[in-house]
Amino acid sequence: MHIVVCAKQVPNPEAAFSMFKVDEQAKTVIPASGLQMVMSPFDEQALEAALRIRDAGIESRISIMTLGPESARAVLKHGLAMGGDDGVLLSDAALQDGDAYSTARVLAAAIGKLGGCDLVLTGRQAADWDAGVVGCGIAELLQLPVITFARDIKVSDRTVRVERVVENGFDVIEAPLPAVVTVSNELGAARTPTLRETMRAARKPVVMWPAADLGLGSGEVGAAGARRVLDRLFVPPRKGACDLVDGATPEEQGLNLAQRLLGAKLL
Amino acid sequence: MSLRGVTVVAELAAGTPTGLSRELLGLARRLVAEIGGQVCAACPGADEAAAAELIAYGADKVYTAGEPALAEYDSDGWTACVAVAVREAGPAAVLIGHTTSGADLAPRLAFRLGAAVATGCVAITLESGVLRFTRPCYGGNVRETISFNTALKVATVRGGCYDALQHDPRRAGETITVAFDKTARRARVLERQRDSGADVRLEEARVVIAGGRGLDGPEGFEVLAELARELNGAVGASRVPCDLGWCPHSMQIGLTGKTVTPELYIAVGISGAGHHMAGCGNARNIVAINTDAEASIYKDARWGVVGDYRKVIPALVEAIRELRATQGRGKA
Ligand SMILES: Cc1cc2nc3c(=O)[nH]c(=O)nc-3n(C[C@H](O)[C@H](O)[C@H](O)COP(=O)(O)OP(=O)(O)OC[C@H]3O[C@@H](n4cnc5c(N)ncnc54)[C@H](O)[C@@H]3O)c2cc1C
Ligand SMILES: Nc1ncnc2c1ncn2[C@@H]1O[C@H](COP(=O)(O)O)[C@@H](O)[C@H]1O
Image 1 (cartoon, each protein chain N blue to C red):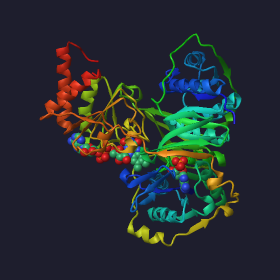
Image 2 (cartoon, chains in turn brown, purple; image 1 turned 60 degrees about the vertical axis):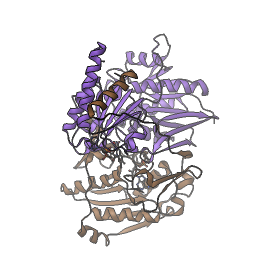
Image 3 (cartoon, rainbow over the protein chains, first blue to last red; image 1 turned 135 degrees about the vertical axis):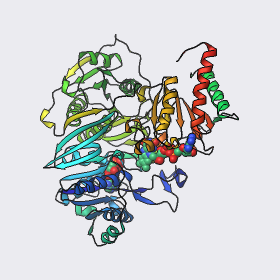
Image 4 (spheres, rainbow over the protein chains, first blue to last red; image 1 turned 90 degrees about the vertical axis):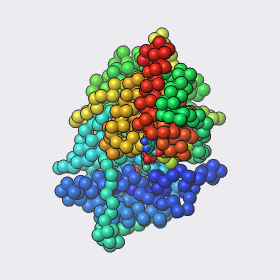
């Protein structure tokens, strides 16, 4: 089995929002200095899913692929320390500032350059723009079946069987390989790298491909290939006028709140 | 670029359009009033009765595959069928509910049709002839407004952002059966497991009581259930209790969970992270119950109680009962 896990580097989404600033003029989000850049959490879980397939006894080569600035190399390092086998860094000036569309094109082309694979795993959405588009995009471009929002993935004999999260439960879906699966947090926590794996990771191979190596023209990638135009970026206003219900005891607080609700015809 | 027509992908529950599908038809009508063209509904599993309902809620044309097998969402089947309908209808935009089905369908459809897609939108506006899509990003802390340089735009829209039209059975429309390539189906649904329980659906409840890490264990949800029974509400959760196994994941509210827009949202032991507020920030009235007076949730709340939920909630339940008794009223 050759599994490709697509992983994006994002500013730590668990950080308090005070660690971010929005420059409305420049239409960018500026992470405060000291804010960590991390592998997007759902992508970490996608890699976890790949490692669980291997743990289940399916011999697997796990490649981690990221598109981003040179600093995104850190994501590959982390993935290799978690247990991945090799890394692909897609980085050069032409590839920057793309959208979900151009990103999917580049990743699909890079998977092609790897000679294809049996299973592509992505996160359900990247934790910066929260789009949830690239996984399905890769599948459509490569004309592969896709199953989204996986909470469990089992591979056997040229098929993949996925438990797919829906509003009130899950579906069990089976598709022939090769296929694309996007992973949701219901899969469970990703493992943390052990010291031993981290030491080994330093010797694992990482290739870096610029756009030109992928057979894509400069008009097809990055900002030039994007279909999305960012018109405005802003912090939504918050209500900010909370009426703190007083009361010396919980009983008084409960009563005062009940009266407020009654007054607003909410009871 | 001239814009004309909007196609809505409609989902059914128990054979009738879901609340969100009706909201999208309402939004579509409003948009075509400006850009012209028709409102089409693509609903692969619609039978005659469902098609009539879609028309009564605003569709001029309903595209169906007339396939009972497509009544429930199936990624390959719906993508193939909706793609055919959209090619025939030729709209400027396709609107889809931001459900697990819609979030699966929209990007596939967009790539297949050479379009672009905005997911999880909270507003779609027309400004000097350009369709603009506003959506939360960065964990719900930021909003982006985007447009696209493709002729066709696809969007998924969160629940509760737009009003449905009045049901009008006199509205006229036609139903078109589309043929699609059944061999397109590669991923097969083997089984559909559904949670039982939850008597009031979260997305449709007028009152939602949600619990977070502050409940400190699964027992906390029993305390919330007591209040929910009193208010005829549904119980939801932040992601933490779901991840910790205190409650099922189907109760998760937020950016990656459900979107709810009740009249009353009572957040208990929830700090108010952007990820969470993205799923409940549009509730009419938010009450926060939290031990920490500095919790961020108070910035979004209309009323707040600073205190331990274990004491405050039972007291609230008691007070509601007493108030109702003195007012001579029963349960809502
Ligand atoms: C990519 C991504 C996606 C996410 N998606 C979602 C999502 O969809 N939905 C979601 O909810 N989260 C989501 N999260 C998680 C989110 O960032 C927060 O971590 C989470 O919402 C916090 O949950 P909480 O408020 O229950 O817990 P905490 O932030 O730990 O807050 C617990 C609160 O309980 C209070 N408390 C403690 N004891 C008591 C008591 N006895 N009585 C009353 N109050 C008490 C505390 O003061 C505190 O404010 C996501 C995170 C990531 C990274
Ligand atoms: N720049 C990137 N590099 C690698 N993988 C990516 C990149 N952008 C998106 N992905 C993958 O696609 C998934 C969905 O991303 P998005 O559509 O941007 O929300 C992510 O969870 C990743 O697995």
